[in-house]
Length: 317
Ligand code: ADP
Ligand code: MG
Image (tube, rainbow, N blue to C red; front, side, top):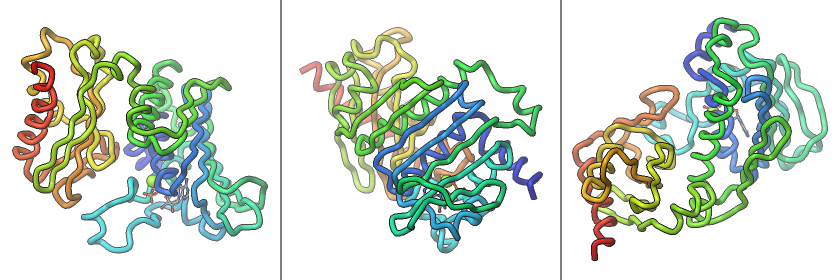
């Protein structure tokens, strides 16, 4: 079964940033309001994520790290209406199979924390919440380890993941540390403040609110004015039902809306959140879940295009 887990791991955790994403989603699913991400050497040496969420009871610990063990789906029909971020129940098992893995957790009513390592549960100390400590990623799958890029590149991917999630969740405090130094710290904020923190003041000072609804579709957020973009290719944040996505259809719709105001090959900057009924979108196209499939992609494209265009037309007035 460990071999199966290692193969599955190749799908779920292709690099340190994928581990960071899975662990952050778990922390948010557990209702955390404070999350600390500690990375060493781009996450290859160590990824340790601590949250103050509801924790896992000691008797549940072996289950949490077992394959296909999820506490998040009660029936098959639930698959259609997944509200929580994770639902496949194999992230922890996969990560554990390719790393030196310990999980420490404490629920509100437990007398002490408990830790699981190599299937063995022992009592330990610690506050309410969970710490997942992943060391020496791919130590036992050297072929995969060989594909990792430099420390700075891997760290950059990890930091991108933290930023995307922090932008979507201003109601949560995030701290990001690398090699013992605090790189980012975002305190509890609202979306106005959080987007200024993450996108920078240029964006904060030159952005237009987007707010449109049509039937089951709602788009809200901010569209940066051309002056706010500075041609940065990394200032495009699009969320579908709370998940960061990078989707051709959506990117195209936004670009088309910018066509008259943005010239040359500059990039628009934006933070946009699309909300729609979960039955109208499939977010499980790929384990990395960055692409989505809409039931009516034409309608979504039209809607996003018009909503952004309407926001941008406020400038020419
Ligand atoms: P999934 O998130 O798809 O259910 P995972 O392998 O990511 O599968 O996690 C397995 C289970 O472990 C989760 O369903 C949850 O019950 C528990 N779990 C994982 N991380 C945390 C956490 N940070 N806080 C509380 N429970 C957690
Ligand atoms: Mg998960």
